[in-house]
Image 1 (cartoon, one colour):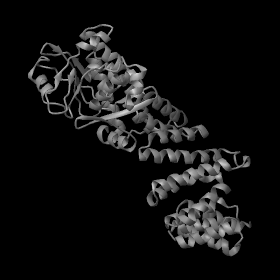
Image 2 (cartoon, one colour; image 1 turned 90 degrees about the vertical axis):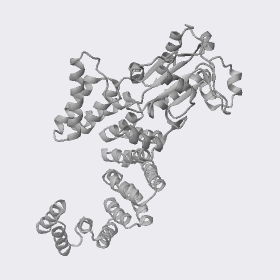
Image 3 (spheres, helix red, strand yellow; image 1 turned 60 degrees about the vertical axis):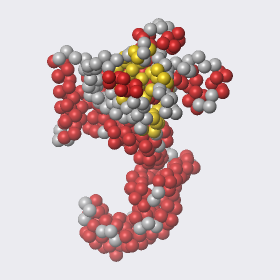
Image 4 (cartoon, one colour; image 1 turned 90 degrees about the horizontal axis):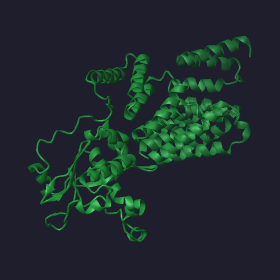
Length: 484
């Protein structure tokens, strides 16, 4: 390329970079007049025209660029973006697929723009199908296309975007699966790590969240937001010194961020006050006020009111805690209950755990064990818990308490609840008609409480007089509304 043409072409590129679109258009047209065969002239003229929102003219230039160079994937990406903005998806999508085949390593530059347009103009299912098809295209490309870092990053991006849209839809399992696949392909992208960590965090997998936030910071130690998120996760785990350092690092990196400054200041105050008072430092992420002192005895009018007025959103009755403990395999097989088939002899303890979680996740409440509720308008029967003593190692109220704490609360609820149980759950054994009942007063938690059974987690809330499980989008919406 002659020096004059090269000089004007370079000037045009600089103007385009500085968003001086009129000047860029003028320079590129001068180059075209001097030598219409100049490599890239139609592409960059199209980009300049697009900056001026001259969409029709830009489409013509990108089309000319592709006609002159059928291998030009870059112009195909830009052409497809313009067509999508004009709702011409039937034309744009095949062009995008061809762009990926021609220049797969460029997809990561465009994936967020493509997603943004799809989400504005197309349905979730269409968006999901497009990015799934992108993964299929990458899977079908030959070895010659796989020899650079840009290709690997671009191959991972559709999985990351699928993770994002599944998360926004409330489909957390699918979101996690896709983020994991993105990381398997390209573990060097910090955003893949912290986005996966965000899902772990709201799902109460604090250890996994900490691991992914740390991985993100190893790749990008200057990300103040991730330092703050890691601090929040440390708080949940009770690792308060680590949390303090991460809050401080976030403020150091972004001293003008008011949210970071407030979090750091509040946390430092909590640490200082607790140290002055000689208290055990606890996590501020969960509501930590103790249950109010019970000024009356368990046989007070308040308790009698709870027993006689029936179940509601704040009161639940259970006949026993150990009714499934003696089930045989034949009993389990014959049962019509899905919970019995899934949890077997532990079913009654699981049901007790989900009731506790439902109260913790809603507005707190009262669980009374030893009352048989009559559904047909008759008075409830005071059954008591004495009949269950024979199933305990220690057949006393103390043994009953330890069974609930160790075999229900400790086994199924998060460690934060077990380790600070007196702040969330108070267990008493009042008597009515010389019959012993078990009364659990439950305080609302400041963070979501998941019931964990092996590798599965369940989230429950109270709705009227029932405990109900919610998941997916309903869970995400409830969590954001209730705990944030």
